[in-house]
Amino acid sequence: MLQFVPLSKYKSGLLFQLLLKCYKEFSYKDKYLNDWKQFDKEAFSNPKIGQCVFITNLDDKPIGFVSYDPRNFPEYAIIGHNCILPMYQGKGYGKMQIEELLGRFKKLHFIRVQVTTGEHSFFSSAQQMYLNCGFKEIKRFIGDKQDIPKIQYEKDL
Image 1: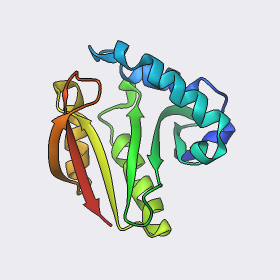
Image 2 (image 1 turned 60 degrees about the vertical axis):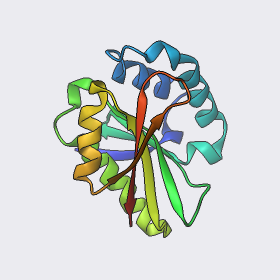
Image 3 (image 1 turned 90 degrees about the vertical axis):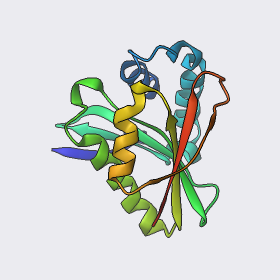
Image 4 (image 1 turned 45 degrees about the vertical axis):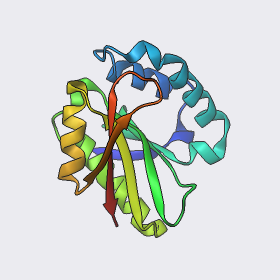
């Protein structure tokens, strides 16, 4: 059974480990390791950040997570890290995770949602998932790491 669990039920290091496993095959991952460690540290040490993360569990086992930034309320929320472990990908769990988040945004009365992903073959399933969830591409740009172009999507709620 799929469950969405608050981050507060877990210990520091989980987010970093999930990101490391999810991006294992991504050729640019080494550029992000320090950012992932910092994100994990901040999410677990700062309750305001931690409350914007939930863990997706399958049969009480963490299989992924999603985070978001609500600081532009009510105009829009930004989806941050969003990942499902490779062995669970292609089974609809990522879409269910995003649909859960979208439902939460609607209850919070956000007007729209934005998300950015890479324009790289590694992210093709994420790109398709966002389109399947009703997002529309709004722009392409070079990311701050100067590694791969990015695609930004948006969805009205």
